[in-house]
Amino acid sequence: MTSPRFRSVVSAGAVALTIVIAGCSSPQPVVPTETPTLSDTPTPAATVPAAPALVPEGSAAQNLPYFTQIVQQVWAGPDQVHGRAYIDALVAAGFPKQSMQVTPDESTVGNPAESIQFSVLWRDGQCLIGQVGPATGSAVAVVEPAVLGGSACLLGTTRPIDW
Image 1 (cartoon, rainbow, N blue to C red):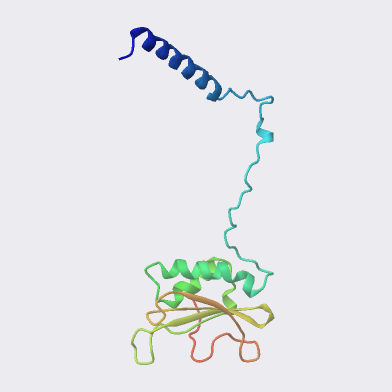
Image 2 (tube, helix red, strand yellow):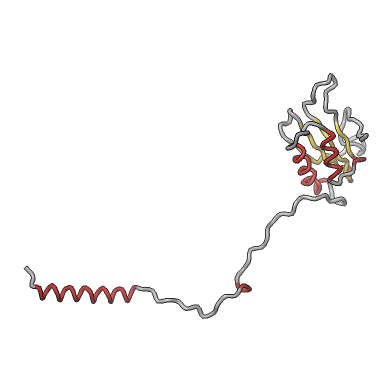
């Protein structure tokens, strides 16, 4: 059995040892020598992509993102299988109506067309072509070379754009 005095010495020693260890292991506060200013802090570069826009003097490939955006907007609306809706939207977006073609909304026997195509003849013998309808399942837009000696984008029967 240990004496009360021995326990007291051991307890005092343990307390002293704890204080010494705690004093050695506690971090000292770090005082900055300079205060950073707003100009010292780096700012991330803005990476907001520009919205597609018509590039009148650009190539068909440069205008494809804008053409695609217009086509997708019409496809998402109530007139998704009406060629006139695409032509009207493209004209409103700045594409030249006189350079467009569109296929009929109905087959030769009067049924709704499985797909319709529409196009814009662009410079340098290039065409912006869109295709939509139940057969495609989604709106498709591509750049393809013009046909018929560079005077057209679509072969076959197209309807007059007389509105």
